[in-house]
Image 1 (tube, rainbow, N blue to C red):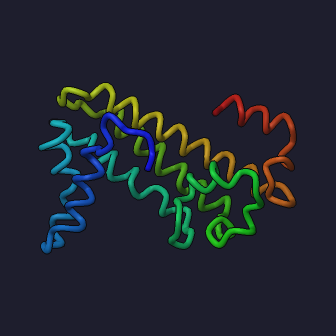
Image 2: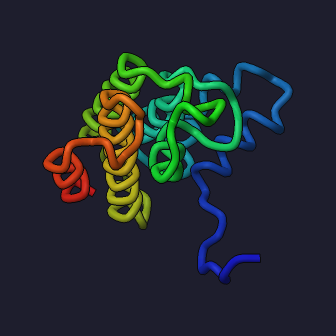
Length: 168
């Protein structure tokens, strides 16, 4: 058990999960962005749902095996250990992390065009932007670690580590 949360269930991931898990009609999963925009975000431009769906797949560009975390989680969680010791992180490459970065940045551009009308739209946008910033930091950290001989955070040159810390 963890600490009590005020809002432990977030509507957007719940709607996406429901569309994928509870619908026998596979065509519904191709319309999740429409459902998010129509019923949750109330975004007449359709861009918020489109950005959310693009972000929900960004980690797949890292091409890591399925397991206990996505690429961004692994970069931030596994910082004390070598990346080559974990069955997921040892599959990471600079090329694939840069693909993730491109996908996230593309989604942020789409997000800028969103005009959601839901009551909490300012919070939704701010939280998505913060999550993107954290994921982009994970990409930067992963690339920096892949560029040093032993893949460890402590082996990243001091000035680069300092810049990464300030970025965070």
